[in-house]
Amino acid sequence: MGLPDDPTEQDWADAAHVVGTGTAAFLHHVGLVPPTWSIVSRFDLVQMTAPGSAEGAPDPRVVRLDTADVPEMLDLTRRTAPGPFLARTIEMGTYLGIRHDGVLAAMAGERMRPSGWVEISAVCTAPEHRGKGLGTSLIRTLIAHVTARGDRAFL
Image (cartoon, rainbow, N blue to C red):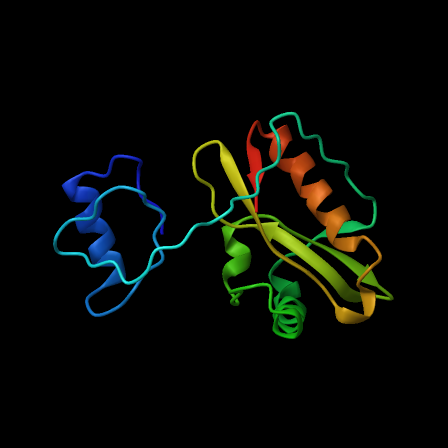
């Protein structure tokens, strides 16, 4: 979960409403938390971002995925475990794939969109197609789409 750099009481109240009671959330926040919140664990995180000058390179093998592709996308993410991916995740942004003999071999897409930024997410390649640069091609294609809109990409 993300909060503004200087969250207000209302920001914290909204976050508490989303999280609920008796549950935990991963929160990117370096400041103090209100007394109604408790910190379970703190850890450092490295955020990978594309440089502002990054230019993507569209790959002609890349196709746009849509809701008809969700069963294959769910199968690929189940086999590769890139992180959470559910049936409606595709609604969060553009998802692209590369097919081999008509079967989805690799995919990547867009998820979170903080102002000026787009997260590249669910980057995964079927085990039998790894080492061929498919993930790199998908990331470079997504970066081309993201920068064309005036945003920057992050993983």
